Length: 126
Image (cartoon, rainbow, N blue to C red; front, side, top):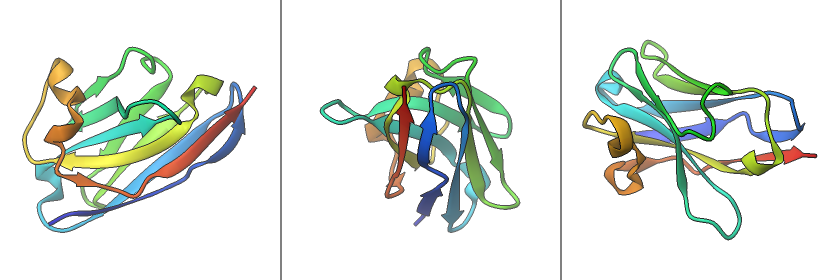
């Protein structure tokens, strides 16, 4: 069993930055692929980024070059550094965990993630 708690959301102007954190509890955190998803009002939940194994990462095209996912296995935490934020990045951001590795579009499948946090709101004003 893994419990995930996100923090770091808030209101920021376009072009600004935010850093989201996700703290995990449970065992063998380093064995999990950790992902970030987001859901805007009226839209489906979409993949943002994944941290796979010790160092591999995967990003949605919409955030490549602006967002960076990282993990600290000793602290059982995963982070999402978001730079050059745009109004279209406004959404509730969710941290998620899955037991198996993924690659490419295989990381995008939300149903493959067994554990989810409660979400944190990110609002980007224009």
